[in-house]
Image 1 (cartoon, one colour):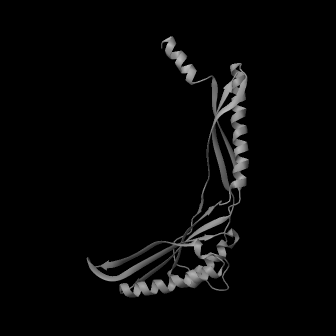
Image 2: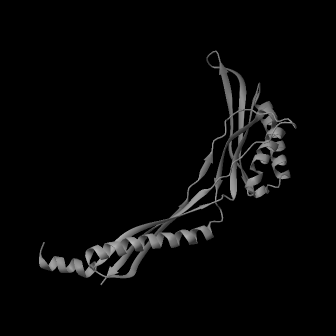
Image 3: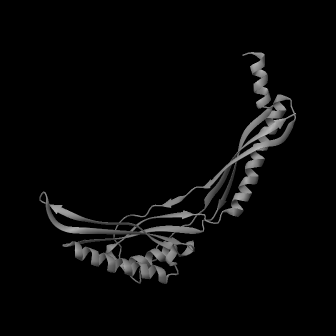
Length: 219
């Protein structure tokens, strides 16, 4: 490498230490997304549509009566398909109608499931649930502080090893997010009785994390 090229590099890349840091904060999720479905099997497409519409309407009404807002109920999938037997002979029709229900009071998640299943009966399917942290502002503030201190501690160590003094932060790049917490729920039909125990739902905690890349100058 020529001296001129080396000097050009140093001009564009001043003496610095480039490190990464990570900050993690565990918080309790503040919402749960429940995947509900109605599945019916009938002789005709018309009957499948009518039965599924009636059942899903009952499920939606029951969920709303639990305090879930209409804006937090979203259709995610509707499918009507023939069922075959003996080769290409159509023997009936299957209609599947799926919803995502956002429960903003996570302590009610189990009760919402029970109520939906009771309203929809044997046609109801509970296909999964995912917890999330919607209001993560405070946790992100704390995670950023941890990430910066983590990166700075590394830079100070490298500066000491190199026999130089650590300068100011010259560049900061952040990446952040939360780890979704899926809760498997067996796909199947459920019929709830008034005397049956309620569905236990463990909310647990989720991790809010910040990853930061920082370039510190050296003196």
